[in-house]
Length: 175
Image 1 (cartoon, rainbow, N blue to C red):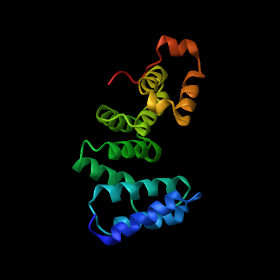
Image 2: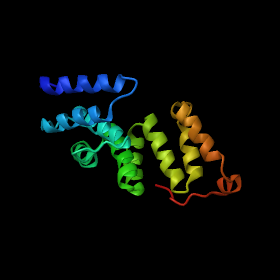
Image 3: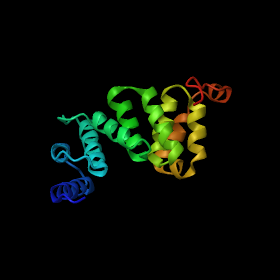
Image 4: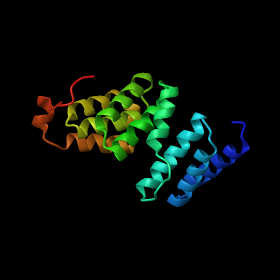
């Protein structure tokens, strides 16, 4: 990154992320400032989208659409794992487009099974009624499910009807 403005904004964002209680308004302000620079660099755009998503979860409005920004990154860099994962999660949370989210997360999983990818995909499989598939996925990637979030997800998946789980409740099908 050659632009000192962008570098300074990224440093501001890092400080805000590291604080014990990041301010949603501050996250959005920094994210919007990054977008306003007109940068096409992937890392600042990803950070801006992550900040906007976190702030939006806290009820803070944002003047740009993170999904559009993430789509543009994926279009430029189809195998960018982090962009695919962020896009998949954003599509599910904000657009309620679970099938498209699954497609992006499965693409990312095929490249590099990151913790966020594995857990996000397992949650979506579970939400779509594919608990066996979700359980198989997190168990196939022990680095992901051996975290607190992974163990919690595994408990949620297996706490349901064992007969349905063992009989194969996979409604999403295979990809």
